[in-house]
Amino acid sequence: NLSDYFAECRARLHDPAAVSFLSGRCISIETAETYGLGFDPDSNPAGSRYPRPRIIIPTNRFHYVARSIDPDTDPGYRSLNNKGAAPDLFNRQALYAPGNEPVFVTEGAFDALSIIEAGGSAIALNSAANGHLLLSALRERPTNHPILLCLDNDETGWVACANLSGQLHDLGVGFRDVCVEVCGEAKDPSESLQVDKPRFIEAIQGLKTKEMGRK
Image (cartoon, rainbow, N blue to C red; front, side):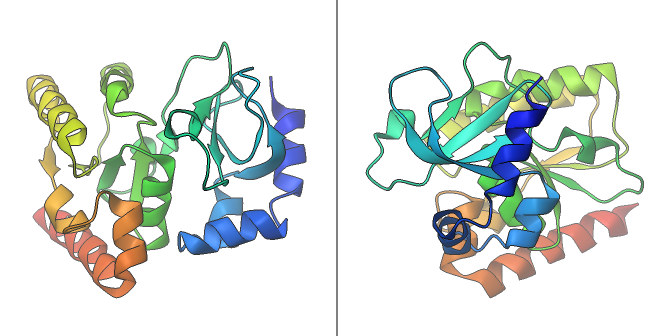
């Protein structure tokens, strides 16, 4: 159980380095606090001898994703899971919230947070390879919410989205792929928010209204 560590990290969220990183991604401190994010100035989650200042993103009591805020971090070490923990979905509870608001499914937690910042509801797989986590969750407990797939706008994301689409269809889950509408020319929702915030918010709100109008 990592509750003490998470509490320490949350207490450091107002560190200027963390605030600067979040604001650069158009994520407010209020949103970050609501979703339990924290900051560790010397995080080494994978025991890789690669400590870096990182935003700490809990997914459950035992697992977190640690996102380096150092721009010079090797891409392979940018987002790391804590060693020995089984990966989980970020914000899984959105699938089971009251109401019929659509839930966007993204790759990264910052993509999900970007959609949340724009007034949507979102979860993150935490990797294009983690589609099975969503499928397992929906098999265990179906959701009333329409699913809007919004994985990264690149080859890996397209392949993962196609794979997930087929399996969601087999499960009888209502879903749509909205990557193009959300991302435009950007690589992912996080970049799309940073590039053109008004367009991004309009896209999220438009998709939300359209889906809820189908009910």
